[in-house]
Image (cartoon, rainbow, N blue to C red; front, side):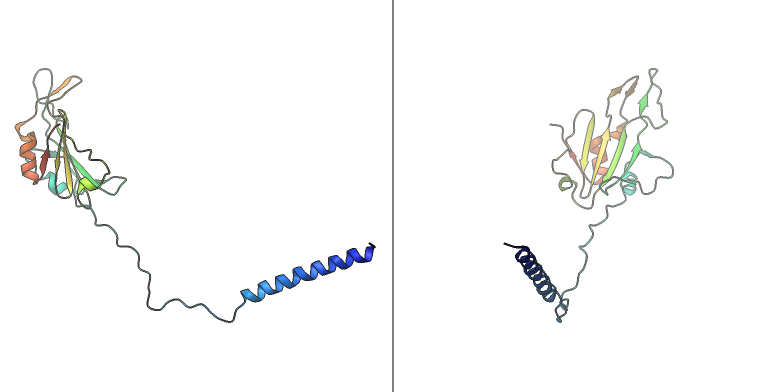
Amino acid sequence: MGKGNGISAMKRTLAAVVAIGALTLAGCSSTETATAPSSTTFSPPPSPPEPANPVPILKKINGCVIKPGVVAGETDIYGNRYAVCNFMDAVDAEGNVMGNGVGTEVEVRTFPGDPRTAVPVDPYRSDDNTKYIIGKDFVVTITNVGKVTGYVELTPSPLADPNKVASEVGGELKPAK
């Protein structure tokens, strides 16, 4: 084999590569234009309903004090809304009511639907310290019911009775198991 044969083979290979490239380009440049279907239009998925304002539910609870300026509550990282109030029923060592936001706390958390389907596992189980009340689209959590916390003993006010609160907000008290 001489030098001429090697150059000739390279020319044939180069010609083949150019021909394949030209065919590929020719296939890509069609005179037909793509058209979008005229009967189908894109519409974004519907947004989930907004959770209700929790403050009106708190206002139904007789004797539970909402901090001044709270009108809509806050939004958690999942888009649910919540607000708190307090019965201020804690007493000090001498039996004096402490006030200042210390006592049985009540949180209302609202959801865009049934709260039992908002989480994969039902976390709403009442116990000695925490009571849960389930409503159509809300959960009321009553915390520190008669619990001794450090130097503060909570003597729950009759207003903090979970059965009474359940009746006031129109929810169902989840029993302790």
